[in-house]
Length: 374
Image (cartoon, rainbow, N blue to C red):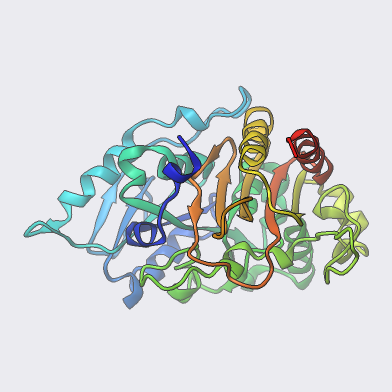
């Protein structure tokens, strides 16, 4: 498939049904949040898929229960390809199950995952299953985290760390039960795990729907893509070779060395989640072949360690910027934007990785760039 053939137009992308993934570890208040969300007007025409049968009944008109079991064995390596077909079947069925007179009765989908679920398999399904990708798009990943017990949860459960790292928004629950010290420690830890995601404190499950919707590149209303908000590259420690970047921290080993954490080495050392979050910038346009070879190399050899990557790319010979979005070893087909969002024409990619530093990403790119024909 050529680059041109794989592009999505902004029109087709914005027409797809947006899907919000609500994740969070057991006991973090996920279902309570969900119950408050679905009562709000913004979600009156949302369809909710619940991946577990909880004790709390959901007060909502449109509910599709999925029997999908997303509890995966992680010790055998990447399990993203082992997702069963239940979720696919559910997403295909709901378009006609919840229809009247041939018209779909919902405008968006909200999926509540099991507390132990790795979010990657669901994201892969949305990105790669041809029956699903032509109808749905990932709007955002929202993760709940208990302010009182969050540090212990992150210590004990790697899946909880991945949920927090991959989130587009973090909902910090049970604030009334957390001490100031516990809150401060968790916020510092999240600076290293996911510095860009907005954090909202949630009391008794109450959160405004607009804070968790339209987190993706496109909106349900078809407005112009908000690249700056989606990429949030300014939140990442990103050294510049010219020394003019406002957030230059001379960070060569991942986000936990960011200046923000300089005063908290004891916390970082005690709670090293092996998550690295950083922005990688390329000044010159990238030849298409170099870009494809680099992404293939990263996905083939490091895919399971690259939790998420978002990027705006200046492809050599193309007037339009290209948007990339990858999760572990899967990349969504590139999206060509109609125009650059600003005067900045640099390629910018933000990475959230597990156990891979910025140096590995940079070295692989430089090696391929130097090999490329002039």
